[in-house]
Length: 538
Image (cartoon, rainbow, N blue to C red; front, side, top):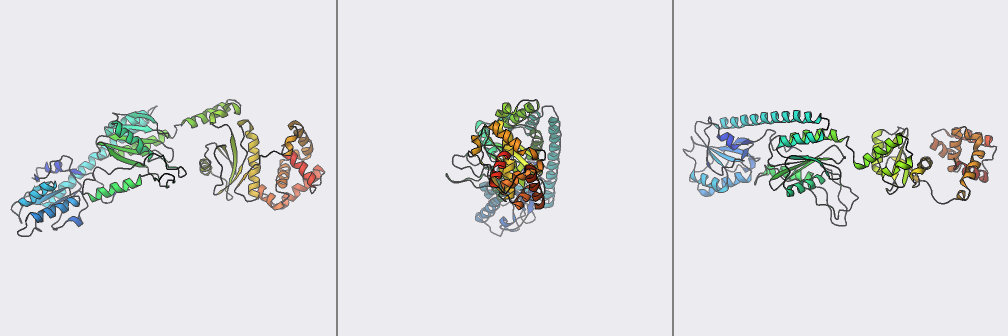
């Protein structure tokens, strides 16, 4: 979040203000630090300006507040309060109140390290303030020009046939630093520019961890230390505004940690993080949402516009990495190509990584069919990217070592764990489990896998008997499905109607038709058992 106490314009170097000949300002005390910057100019004659300063000001005073006979103690207290408030420099106007800058004020500024400027009688405070804003406008224009040129350069690099490395190379050149792209598994995919020192390099790698979603179910013991964003360079000693900004940034990028044996607290994952290690400025930017790619930048200096330029590169890389595949995704793509070219499923199943799988059929609550985003979210919740949002039912292939638990807003039917060659049978199991789950209003129902009496009959004989017994209704799938669902629900008209999404009278008519075509008494438990045995073979 942007700090409201910091102006949107870039700061002005104090040296640039001193170089203005029309002002005639002269430094008479304090450090001659070329890095000293001011963010605004403010005139005040308060004896204690602390409550009215935000930090980074050039405070202008004509000494009206100085009492007669003021000694070193008064000036020491006055200057110390300016420093405590984060003031960048003090400008003292000579005449009409004082003919010269008080010596005690010069000594106090020297002691506290506050730059003291002498403002000549011909220069008004308004002229100083106007010069500050003019320099800020010039700096802002230069920053916008630099950012615009960088955007054009990065866009041109992104249009190249192999764009990732050119984008990183242009970014490193524009920032005069090092830029790298990290994969979801924290490996460094590509980099450009002079690498940072080893300590800073490792710190940047650790910083990227703060941008990856934390697993709330993973024990915190043994996890890497939390990465924290450091305060910005403007957070000099005594600068309340900059220190507050650094504190808020640090809180936003800190991953929730817990004591050993406890579980980590779920905290929002930040989209960017920064730090400074051994004088090297580090920054990391998450690419997209939840994909795990991270852009990392290390620069020896941080200048206005760097964050904007890096953000442009992050946006471009987000689009470019959308087509990147991890090793798992590449294997899935390879398996699909082989299947399309006619390779039998069992021969390509090893590319998917698991030996045994559950087939899950899912229906969302409500009448509307699932949209692709909801189906993708379901696959993520189940831990699988093998999702088929076909019609009103979503089918998901889930590795057997991933537990399938009830999910809010979904009704699930789960097959037994099977090898790839038995996926068609698992698909049937999951469909039947889902039908029973919806009929019984159960969130999740698993297909039973315990041994049955049917296992005592040779499969060939069982299949032949099933075909013969069900031949009169085999040509009408609606009758077969209705009879199977009705028997699985113990002859309940209402629950069968719910499972098939038809009227209960339709169920009655279909069951009566089955009884007539099969020439069987469906109230006889022996008949029901034999029919159920046959239906399980189809």
